[in-house]
Image (cartoon, rainbow, N blue to C red):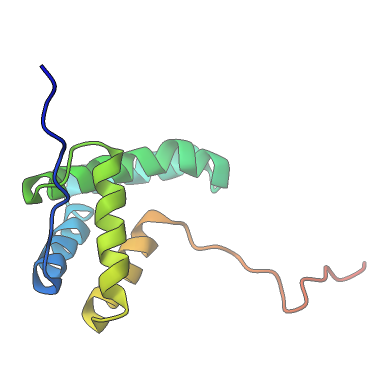
Length: 122
């Protein structure tokens, strides 16, 4: 028997702030922080390995929070939530700030080349 198509959760900006705050807090739960640290260490700052090892752990942590707000418990739910956050970022400075904080938890600090991108000759 086919199930009914999943409805897109609709959250207000206020609800989005609450969910985003809970997602950020979920990353500081000791068990989740340890899982993220282990994945980061295994990835050794290699961006390809980060995508293979860190991103799935981060997605699972987010899914645990957002599923109780009507998002499906698959990667698609995290993507829909990310789109909702992105939509509110331009309208709500608090959501924008929390979004930056969440991204900093997910992505390693990137080293940027010097202005001009030139490598000094030796």
